[in-house]
Image (tube, rainbow over all chains, first blue to last red; front, side, top):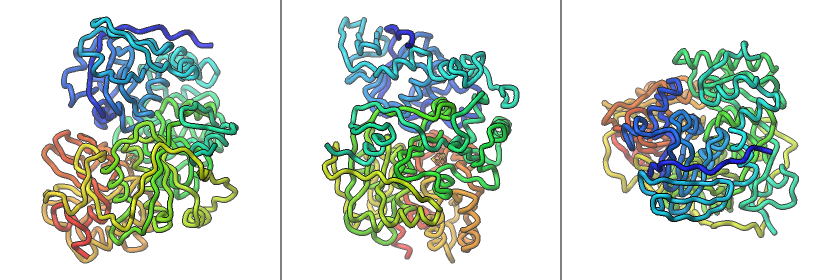
Length: 188
Length: 414
Ligand code: SF4
């Protein structure tokens, strides 16, 4: 069984509806390494945001969050230190990318009115409890399924694959944060 | 209790008697398709994989390599297929956009599960396949373990009646649906009804492909005679179709009368609740027109464009780019004379690649430019500058508009 996923508390950054993957990971950023690419998250909807976001912060979005490509946007959020995602509605591919990267993500109805920019947000994906510490209001929604909690608790699928002997353990963590690209032959 | 097509398919693959919206299922993946980008970002060759016979590698998004990063990805891909004896490897020269390669080679089979690193993998739903685009990390996991999980979403069924009118195609059907009903986030789409028989396979694939644009999970078509003969031509046999039960539960059933459809155009930004019949679009001058992509770079799309452009000229000030969806489409279109007609009209016929569709390595738009595209996605910044505007329409509408110089009805030219 996986380690439990602990509740997360952090500063909320609140965004709108239908934020697509091109708005977070534009094609021209795909030519860059992860650190440089991460500077493009929300580059058109909120220029300069990547300089303001701090490790432990939480991104809150509206409906249809992450519609678009399979490009690994979750890795960019992790690189920026974002601790969790909350949205009123997630595109399922985008949600899976977050889960598989080990980034907790919770669907919270009405999230963009429940939280305001700068509020302190808490979420517990294991119980579905979420709270706005700044207003003192807490609510509950559906928790994540066990199978999904297991992946997040393990830090994403790559560490799980390493543990199961599918890839070298030493590189799983590094791969996750994009710190390394191992050439095919040297890893074989 | 009845099941929709996708519920039936997933139930069978998960060995469960009943699967319904809200369930989480674990299924074996019948075909795992990796694209070049998978190897160009953070790639580590796995120590072992589930089954080399269920793996396909396609070089498509950035070929021939436009950068050192992409070249290195190619090196990784070639070493990987060699190490594991992957026979289905579509390297540069045999390449094509993954969804076209999947279709041409009969890799998507009715009643089976297919996963691929590109978000438009729902394209293969045209072949009654449970096909999803998944992120590189998840594809890596499927490559290793051979299985994955899905949370089953509720299904919306589109019931088609009538016949597709001339100069109206699958793109118009989809743009009409997207304009009328908008997003389908966390929903599956299912297409059927008596009108389906008049919708050819290329149009079905366009419609299935674009499900990603309304944020849907799976898009699925049933197995009929049109699909059966398509599959027979590609040597696909011995499959078990996933049909919907008569008493299946749908989130909604929506009627689309094909007889009434006209060519549609989506305005820039999204296709969702953002399209109008071409007769209602304002007169927009074009800088670029693009016919291509996995959705609309098929042989039939090129035929339609070539017929419109034959003996005509692209308007001054317009750049018309045409990208065949695969090397095979390229060769067939050349043999049929389509490429000659297109080039004679002033079009730039490019190598088969994703290129212009995702603004990566060619056909990039500058600030203030206006593009009419038949590709899949019209997000702000998708094809280059965030200050460019991307309208979307069918290959017929794009071809006619390239001649006129502004967005125009293809029926006005014929
Ligand atoms: S043509 Fe466009 S939509 Fe299709 S696979 Fe390539 S990038 Fe994706």
